[in-house]
Amino acid sequence: MVKERKSLSAGHGIGAWLQQRITAVIMVVAIFQVFIFLILANEVIDSNFITWQQFFSFIFVKIFTQIVLLAVMIHAWIGMRDVVMDYIKSYSARVTLFSIIVVWLVGCAIYSAVILWS
Amino acid sequence: MTKMKFSIYRYNPEKDTKPYYQDYEIEVGEHDKKLLNVLVRIKDELDDSLSFRRSCREGVCGSDAMNINGRNGLACLTDVAGLKQPVVLSPIPGLPVIRDLIVDMTQFFHQYHSVTPYVVDNRPMPERERLQSPEDRKELDGVIECILCACCSTACPSFWWNPDKFLGPAALLHAYRFLADTRDQATNSRLNDLNDPYRLFRCHTIMNCVDVCPKHLNPTKAIGKIKEMMIARMV
Image: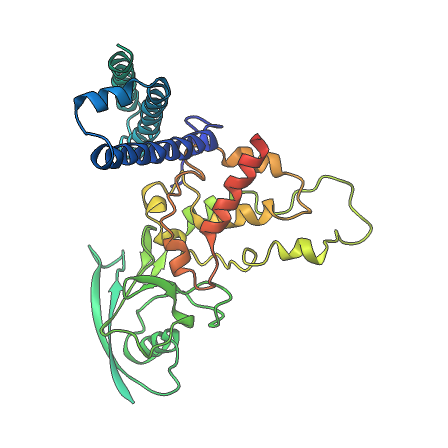
């Protein structure tokens, strides 16, 4: 009944777990950053296209946004990997899905970087 | 004496094509304090074909784990008074049923054995026993009391889904019991063995294990401490 232990990626347990927690913290900080900007934009300064553009043109906002976007990709990858490992039992289907997810996430990362830095 | 209604899961693979619930009604007296007392009386007085495991009848052996009104627990520690009627009794979920309330615990014990559940110390044997300071022994409090009744692991959705790959809360509690033991010399290999996506990390902190443990232990806390040990080893 009990199958032989199959370890897909031994040694990757704590690393993935830790990455997911760290990226989650980064995303929480980003949510607060956006909220504070929205409150300030509505209360203190005018909220219009110019203020939004100015805010996102600050270099440290750009760098932080890039870090947040990468954190979202890493977080999404680990989450999707876990879901696929739980629900897809066939190894060939898993590899196919993993490939699609990686291509999609890398595509998103490149596209977001182009938008952010162009 | 008051009448109590029970609805008990029945399945005899030699006779039944599928499981069903059978209703029983029994007079419960002042001496029938615990659910196990009543179950033994049902077997004695109403239906001797009803099968369940039991041994010590005082919460030490862990034999009579069952699902009582939708919640895992030990029949011998569950007060009859206060149970919602009809009392629905089922086998602990997620393990194959052998007959009635008896389940096949092979998978559960396989996971337990896989954590090397004994102290590993390859140093020369001392003349007398390996001593431990009272402070070091204190580390094992809240861990060593586990009786392997399987209430926790069979209440864990992660264990239901991956019973062959995820160790389950009981085995992980025991894994921590030996990691926390100062006499054990195999910390590194124990941590290496747990460091894959399934064995430990399928725990999503649902905490059903803490909720149902009849000994009031906290496997989730033990799992957290194993993660802390892994992180401490990395940095």
